[in-house]
Length: 149
Image 1 (cartoon, helix red, strand yellow):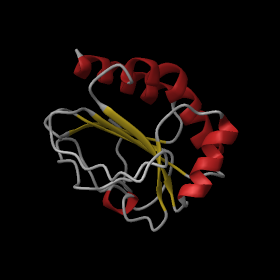
Image 2 (cartoon, one colour):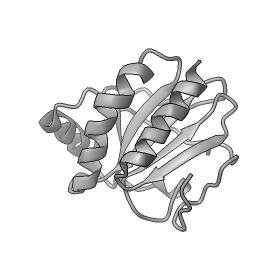
Image 3 (spheres, one colour):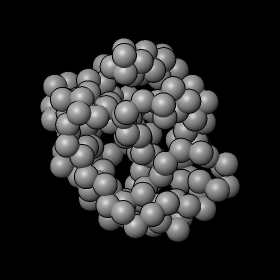
Image 4 (tube, one colour):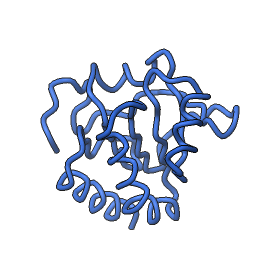
């Protein structure tokens, strides 16, 4: 796992008690344990974020969507409408949510995107990434597969 001076979480930390409203519905999602959770944070103008989402959609999402885990990509400081437009323009099939006031993101990090946080079924952080780095993403995919089996 990379050292990240801007992340508030370290390996073994518990999943923060956040509530997320997917752009696809008005249903608020809260989590307990017993589910693998993968969160991705992005901002619309970020080119690395777009590369990250393309990678996730092609290499991680196909296997992960078949698991009992939960994935969501969260638009930091974007409205639901902005995130929907971004999703539609990018032809993304991933689940998205908006974080217009940064209230979700601020429980994970101070700054910098894209980011991924992977939590195991006990709700503990097992891996995080920052930036678009193929080695980190490959490792993320391997850890995710190990957790899912």
